[in-house]
Image (cartoon, rainbow, N blue to C red):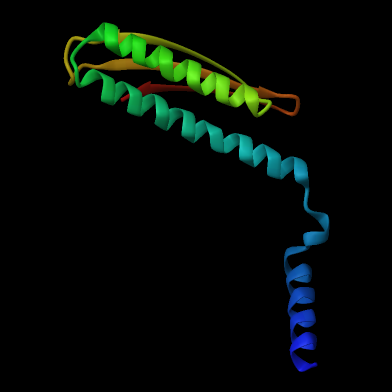
Amino acid sequence: MASVIMIFTLVGLVHYIYDLAEVNLIEIEEMGELYYIDYIKKSLNETVVGSFASMDCNKLQTDIEFTKSLLEDELIKRGTNLTISYQILDCSSPSNLEVDFNFTLSKSNLYTITEFRSP
């Protein structure tokens, strides 16, 4: 009986401290969507760095297109629209490699624009 009272008290205390009764599900969903930003940046960066090891700019473009298509398709399945655009600025050597990326995530309650240079 004492353990039941202790558990009940602990649960009540947690509810009081964190106010779990008023969790805003929209905010949780938005935070989940914002997680995608880091994932997309990481995937595109890894594609650029991994692809350029071959020193072939055509392969770089093909690999970016493949990753772009894969990410866009995966997010559309989750109800989020992703649009990625990019420009290969320099592909002459690994030390000069530069690719500018711009992508948007959109959903009924969320719209983000992210720009970054890789690597």
